[in-house]
Length: 156
Image (cartoon, rainbow, N blue to C red; front, side, top):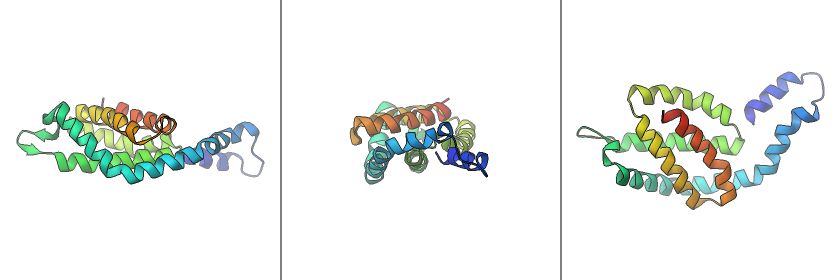
């Protein structure tokens, strides 16, 4: 929404916006209360969600958090929290495009350089499952596609 709002401000300089140009704002306002609720739940449950994801990731493949004898758990957790918070922000402001531009494309190159796509793919898949346990179905319907976008860009 923020990207769209910036574009709208530029395009309607000196004139009134059309109904069509304002449609995205009306759509946002229809989901705003749900977005706020989901965001607050995500914020409160972040530690629990990340820990659940980490446990499930280890159960799926313990080697995903290791490189040889080096334990990558702390690095994974830091990266997972950063990605999770950016996704939550994108949910709050309805700006998936901004998420892709600000974080995901940059992070994608780093993930690829470390050949960590498989870990990201599984992490964000599990994250979607865990998040569904903490949100209502309607809230999850707004947030899980954002996590799926992160999975798509970082996991391939």
